[in-house]
Image 1 (cartoon, rainbow, N blue to C red):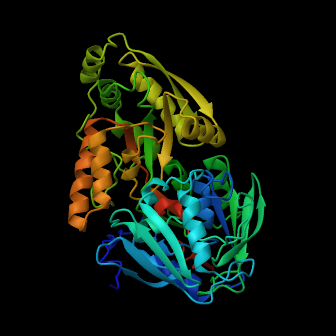
Image 2 (image 1 turned 120 degrees about the vertical axis):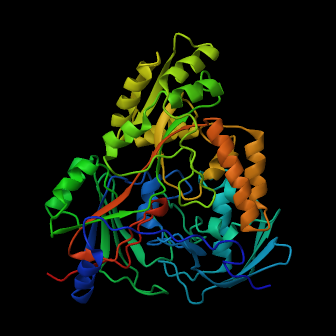
Image 3 (image 1 turned 45 degrees about the horizontal axis):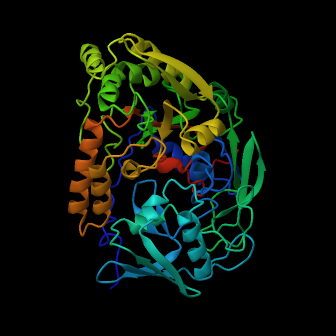
Amino acid sequence: MTASLKETGLGLRSLTISVAFAIVGATGAMAQDNADPSAVIRIGSLYEPQNLDNTAGAGQGINEAFNGNVYEGLFQLTDDGDVVEKLVSGFEMSEDGLTYTFTLQPDVTFHSGDRLTAADVKHSIERVTAETSQSSRKRSLANIESVEAKDDSTVVVTLKERSISLPYNLTYVWIVNDAAEDLTSGEDGTGPYRLDNWRRGSSITLSPYENYWGEKPKNGGVTFSYFKEATALNNALLTGAVDIITSVQSPDSLIQFQDNPSFVVTDGQSTTKEVLAYNDRVAPFDNVKVRKAVARAIDRERLLNSIWGDYGTLIGSFVPPTDPWYVDLTDVDAYDPESARALLAEAGYADGFTFTLDTPNYDPHPIVAQFLQNELAKVGITVNINIITANEWYTKIYQAHDFQATLQEHVNHRDIVFYGNPNFYWGYNNPQVVELIASAEASGSEAERDEKLTQANRIIAEDAASGWLYLYPQIVVSTASVSGYPVNGLNSQFFAYDIVKQAQ
């Protein structure tokens, strides 16, 4: 039968965009009316990719620069949270929900000039599900039994069990040319931009792809410039070195832009969680009472205020309010130092303990680490802070699982599934949660799926599987001369093709 996204359970709730400090509409209209189609948009970011392949541990920066810009999927997650068809012109789902037949858009070419075929789609999906893949969504697609290139324009995906989220999960699969070789330093996608240059440690430059199959970009190209510190990034915007900051990392810097007609500040919806991730495999964090004690010893409201002022949101689990299975769990293991001390005694740590907190070296993690060090000292826990680079975090924490606790921001949308994977870097393993998350995906309706994931969410919170410190705000700041940029930053994606810059 022919299936729509709504029928397959992917009618995602749209996110509401709130505008703070400036009315984007008026500025946007002015920029649109006087737009310079040859203008190169200069985007400032703190998140340089580790490499250019999202199946090789490239980090969130590659999603920001390449997702939807250089690479496209069969489906796309929009900035409003909807799933739309992209490289498919339509699809059919069998009555039992186990077979999906996708028809590809015609006349699509890769940046190398090769034509997109079903063989490329088969290759791309299998790259993500391969044993060597380091994609964070690999497990979400493990339900795929086979991928068949029926003919050049038809792809058949057969599942082991029903997967209500298959189109959504396929938004994470970038379609690459099956003839492409080293994708860690190059690319061959179908998107509106092609890679011009990657100056490691400095910038990525993209230019419009002249033979793009869809609507052409509204600008003359994009340069992502990378900064190590938020202060340097803010200064780049103030001095005109960049046009946009994709995500402001400190509310203190907003004073420079507020009430200034030269800049526009927007406050969108975020899915980025600041997480104190324990290694649940090792002592003392293999003890649920210890994890709950640590949670109760941290004044998260004061932490959020010290980092973000009036911005951001407290969360009691890994699930943000934009997910359908969200429930307010902030009262679970709420701030209570006396209770924390009692739990530590029950767990056999009446005199406290010492642990190492591996902390990424970029904002706001070092400041958060110092706050946690001070808070936990009040209940007898000594925190040794070990500052590491993003590369070290990936190899030491994500790959080798060689840590006691760490800090990390998790940006992905609908990522409760990570707690259903005992092999994920934090090692949380509750068989009931594993079963709930797995069976939720095989649900026959959204209501059934949401009920199971809500239950899993509650269990994860009661287990204090990690420490969920706060939900970031999503603050984008730009000069008043540009408009058309995304403001919600789901999964750190930053679509550049609709951005326009006012002619000077």
